[in-house]
Image (cartoon, rainbow, N blue to C red; front, side, top):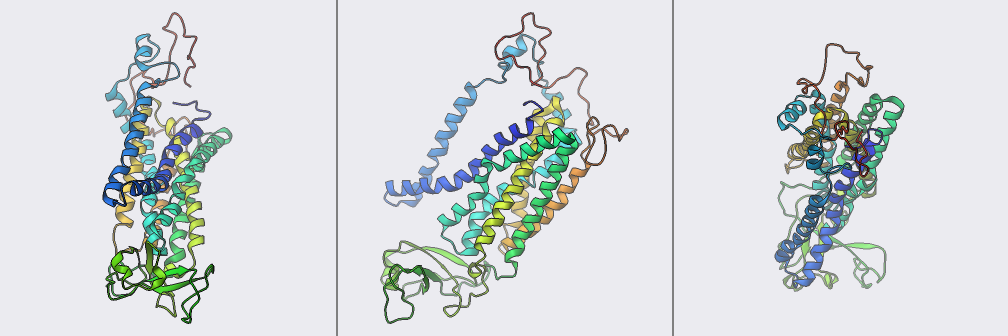
Length: 435
């Protein structure tokens, strides 16, 4: 419903700041949980339930403001329809027109592999960093939040680039920039998976028969070779072992353990004062984990690639919604809803195909998902607008084809199109006609 000149950046910013909530949630809910833990005397079950009071309150505030808001800059729907400025919508027409547009379905599929990919990565990233790199869950969550937090700028950049492409090359500029950035998204996704593929991943189906080691630092020097000086920046692998310890891990896997009073009766004194610890397979000479991903030292590179991946994904999202408003103006709401639903469906599909099986490595899942992104993105080539053309053709180049299979009735306008000609006195306040 924005001016066509800036519809890309307007849509992208609104959507991007909505998606920003994904990153904020990953970061904030953990802190809210810790606050409730302190308030309830470390009652974990009660604390997680109390956490959901916060989004409930935010939803109620959001609903209040939405219901109190004005429908359009021109005024509310009911008043505009009563004065004849706005055409009353016909839901059956809108649904038929929107659902019968081939361009809408192509964008629905491709959006499933940019926004859908974002939802999937946000869903699996914390567990990925925790399991593959043996990080504490809070630290893994903080790193994973990068993917959602970058929505504060990256999706808007996609909208800006879409409007720039339109200014210089018309609709072909919007389509080409979308195609290029979503293809880059697939390439970076594949690279993200290949980086760690040569290393041994956690074995989720193997026998848990290995003693886990914790990487601790800053110990008082002793005669034993495993002790370090206080304040040392170095660290040492310490076995999480004893007569009362039941926790074991499988090959190259990790486990966050809360140290209980029972544990302390048989644990090494170097665990004194530590409440939680992550145990994993140590490298030599302490263990046999030299080839494990967690000991590869690749974490900084993976974080950089995650950042670049988020740039490509969110640019593609903003670029998609730079095209959506032009698909079918009379059915703009239906088309927008279809494409948005495609994003959610894509998340379900990618998560189910690539990240739910314990026998499929997460990094291999990234590679498969990247290949799928490349294949589905090629469908953008087939988007054609009779009045604008396509990536490779000019307007009207294909005479025998119209992507709008069911035409709207003659004179039917979009819900945001105002006509003040039937009104005796044009409004002087809030009367900017939507383009």
